[in-house]
Length: 279
Image 1 (cartoon, one colour):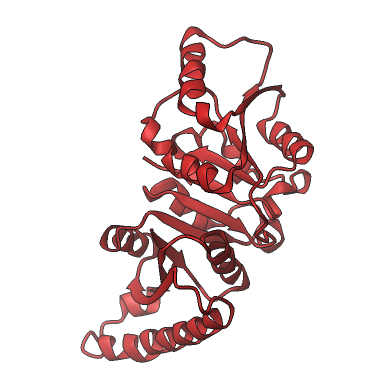
Image 2 (cartoon, rainbow, N blue to C red):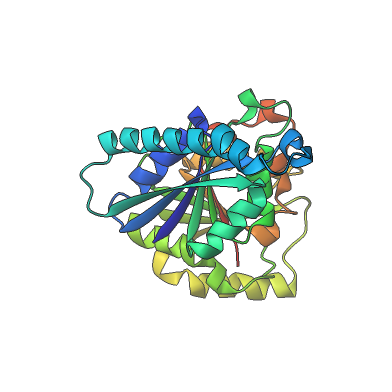
């Protein structure tokens, strides 16, 4: 498995690395730790182009490589020896999203693992702008690790769905892989905002889900609530959920779970990882 770990050397990105190492401790993995030295306006607008490569190397590339070397030493103190894990470091100078997309392709990445600061480090949103951009604009399954998330054995996974299948079922494979390894219980959660039953298409898709997840013996939960985030909050607390999985194509419907701004009412964003599935 190839895993991309973007880092800005912050505590929350370090926490995501720790989570990934523990989560995949028994899986053969190539971890690619990527630091993107983000192009700033000064360098982009500097007219003395002859000196720019040297400036970039001195100001960005060399310090980044040194910090990645130090990070690797730190990782070796907690994950050595583990014959399942190989680590590679990458320094990139450019634009964040473009760099992520490039290395997803070049390294044949299976999953991105990213940290997010949570409400305490943000002015408004639960998921920071970089993480929010990645899960909506990069077509790669992403595990979003909040800054307070500590790895515990995955026992309960929630999968919110509106039962509208606008994606190929293969999109769900990273979720079934986790269920296979962890032997976790799966709760498929449908949230209704008003008293309406499922339509014909949703009933058909419900049967498809039952067949697809049959070996994992999922439970199907129907929650009625005016606000999606309140329903998820209540369900997470009641069932002691360890991970929430969602399909990226459903993020418009479930955007209040990840991009809600009234963070004072939502606690799960600080310690429950999200698995965002892409086609």
